Amino acid sequence: MHPPLLCPPMPWRPACRALLAVLLAALLAGCAGIAPPAPWPERLQALLPADVLLLGEQHDAAEHQRLQRAAVQWLAARGQLAAVVIEMAERGHSTRGLPGHASAAQVRAALQWNDAAWPWSVHGPVVMAAVAAGVPVRGGNLPRSQMRAAMDDTAWDQHLPAPALQRQYEALRQGHCGLLPETQLAPMARVQIARDASLARTAQEALRPGQTVVLLAGSGHALRSLGVPTHWPASLRSRVVIAHTAPAPDALHGEADTVIETPALAPHDACAGLRRERPAPAATSTPR
Image (cartoon, rainbow, N blue to C red):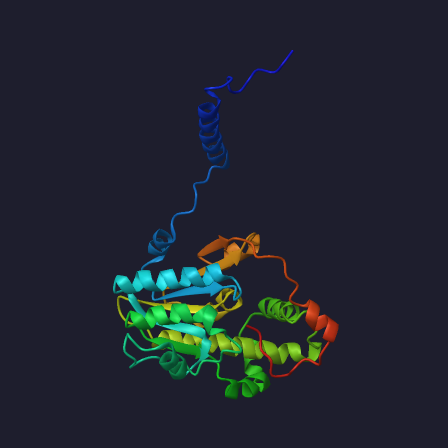
């Protein structure tokens, strides 16, 4: 016996198949019990009002920078954007005073941009979107001139609870491909914590009543249990969005108000070259 036909023979088969596709999609959605993610502006609206909106990114994921730019433009168009604070420039540098039609060269000079560390082609568009909207962009990262002092400042060892500090050490091990000597873990963690404190302080200084400061940083800085949010007072209304290439680990959802999954990137072993060369780790290198 032949199985029953799901669709009759031509000429009705194309229409039938189209109908089955619609029904199957509806069935799967019902079984999953979830609706498709809302568009990005709607998700932003659900997070407001907020004093600071912290957007954590994966630095090599272009979709993450696109989402940041869209957020900046959306908030600026509504008069809700107080400032943009970025990890990609050092604290003390700002575009304040530049006109909206300032050139990229003028903006880079104002921020003392380091293109070797932060390619302008990647991070420049969101900066220029803010400048064009008349919104100041402020560097928030710890200046390199202060990193040695941070490495030696054991007071930073007390900022995180012991379990969280151990997680910070493990993140540094992985972030440096297992090549970082154990003796450098504590100094490097101090720098990471000091960088978080610098970003947090810069964002607080940019606050304006009724508006939101957008803070752009790597996802490690955005973690609620380890990063920038640990330096903010409880009275500050902060919202954390972390963008992560799919699939995002379950634990990440507990670190943010919203986790946005973006398409996976092509496989790439960033540690392969380092392991082949096995260079002596630089004491002044810092995680991003």
